[in-house]
Amino acid sequence: MSSYKLIDGKKISQDIEKEIAEEVKLLKKDKMKVPHLAAILVGNDPASHIYVENKVKACHRVGFDSTLFKFSETMTEAKLLKEIERMNQDPDIDGFIVQLPLPDQISEERVIETITPEKDVDGFTNQNYGRIISPQPGLLPATPFGIMELLKRYKIKTTGKHAVVVGHSRTVGAPLGMLLSHEGNATVTQCHVHTHNLESFTKQADILCVAVGKPGLITGNMVKEGVVVIDVGTTRVKDPSKKSGFRLAGDVLFDEVAPKCSFITPVPGGVGPMTIASLLLNTLKACKQRNE
Ligand code: NAP
Image 1 (cartoon, rainbow, N blue to C red):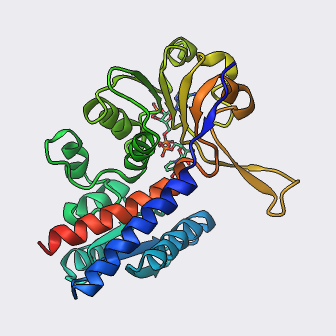
Image 2 (image 1 turned 60 degrees about the horizontal axis):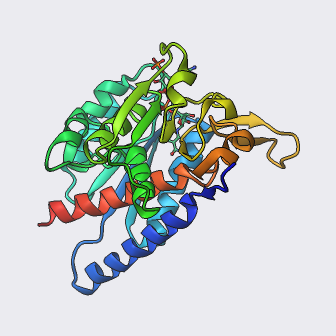
């Protein structure tokens, strides 16, 4: 049994926010443009409202300008694409996000591909996705970017390590596997819903990243001693002991897995805060590049 270290995403994200706030102060001092992040929210999904409001609050903390555009659940795809085109052209907006999921009448793929890659601070467009493996990456997908930053700041070596990523979604699992392989020089195994005998792969992992959305998927007998575990899963589960009536659960059964780990992220307070920090870093980068 090893004594594990918690990877404190909340603390690292606060450190990053302080660093960004310092840069913003310098920009203001030099009378340069302050980064401006805009967010589009369509519909009434309560979780999406909380996510977007947290992003706006983060902008205020670091001194960015921010604008929130709210639209009704019945908005048409054509109208949304027009709004995106308008933001692509708006010289004051450096980066913007369209909060997912979108109502059924709107194609997420068409929406993402209408965002100009230079302002795509979520890092979701095909161009930014492809540029993960280019010598000059564009704006990196926010959650995988945040995970790489956590590994770096905790000085966790990835070169030559066996990284097993469970999940191959476009926004998290697939780009994370690419980053670990190309930037991290790890040997990567990508698992997903069709993987036979998941445990035979997770047991080999030096670094195990899980991005599925199934609480308790990874149990203690599925990992080896000394593993580094990054739990991306965030699922709301009922918990009558909480005032709100629910809590956020990761994909990893923490109490069983943590004692075998060298490092592990908690849920909440691990990967989650890093996604917002990455969004701010991408907005700063987009602003600097547009004003070079
Ligand atoms: P997603 O699009 O639903 O993808 C889930 C992935 O897991 C898919 O690749 C799926 O494979 C795979 N999968 C499903 N069941 C599996 C199983 N039993 N064994 C192995 N793989 C399985 O979800 P996502 O957007 O990647 O998000 C994953 C989790 O991370 C969710 O809980 C989400 O809330 C959370 N998340 C957190 C943050 C954060 O900032 N903390 C950011 C983004 C997402 P197939 O595609 O083949 O079905």
